[in-house]
Length: 221
Image 1: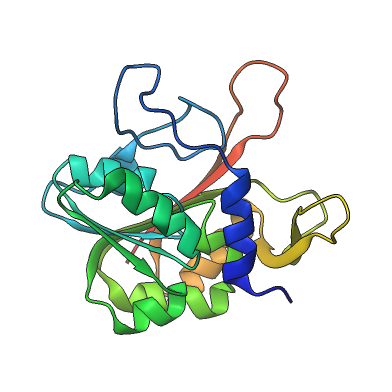
Image 2 (image 1 turned 120 degrees about the vertical axis):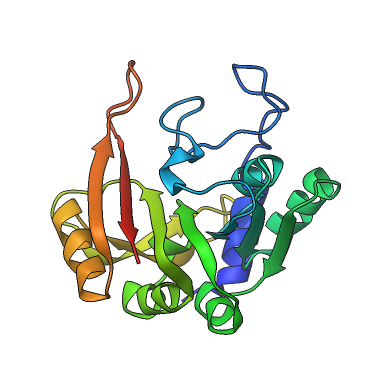
């Protein structure tokens, strides 16, 4: 299996930078989906200014930066040095934002408690939930919310799947694992690991030619 840091460094080079402002003219914003200016905002986390919030697989940290701008202590974790270099270049002067290069489970094993934990197409999608969910539960304060989003699974393709990151035309793609489950399967997994108030819904894609929505799952410790 491909080294994950190398894979996500490669992915980072393929992704465009977040726009300077969104359609509302905001310099920071939260986006749960794969589409611009679509879907709910940070209210899904149910936290107030001053809260400690953890982004697992923060990438270039646009969502974490938005939480910091709202007055929260936003902690972002990612395995990719290049993603974090880009994040620090853009957000280094923003108070309240803390970034770490680490694997999600290893970071959680040494971290303090958090008021909320979230993942947007991040570590909740690309880490074995049998390892990750107990680690999150151990660091999430009672009543704290876990929220994550990812693409819904392809029908019939459930559990651990191969996810391909393309490289040059003469190179084989890099391969990482991802975990795809339908809504009811996520509800069962979360309940088995001590979470309650579990909700899982597929948010439809914005109007147009796109048909693939976004799976958004939330639960409480």
